[in-house]
Image (cartoon, rainbow, N blue to C red; front, side, top):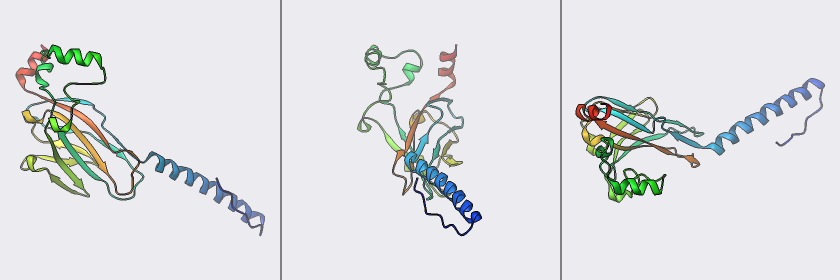
Length: 194
């Protein structure tokens, strides 16, 4: 850290200057740490199973060094293949063989966006929440800082949900994270649990 010349008018002023330097030094370390870390987005639950026609909340946390308000956006991406069959123990042998060869690859989640449905669910800027066209008329909002609240789940809600945070002056860090939502009906839930 830089040192500054200390005027020696009297001993008390000299001590005050040393204290100021210590405070300045720690303040600089704090701000440099915040700038290096930048924006950090995390979704605590990587997979969530919920019941058809029931409400759910998809949680998203973020920290930022920006003093500007963040824009929160939740984006939906459909499965690459039908996930319901796998949930009921009926996954295809081809998908099982491919995922065994590459443990990081998931045939249901990992594909180009051009091979699946992608749409904006909701965005929040300040206190204003705007729903994407497909979701207008539904009980969906963004609560707390960035949690997506869905009032009544439908079959088509199963898929990946991305929490994306944008700030105008925080360009470093991780600006998105995702959670998989699997919507089950009563019949499919009985097959899985019993």
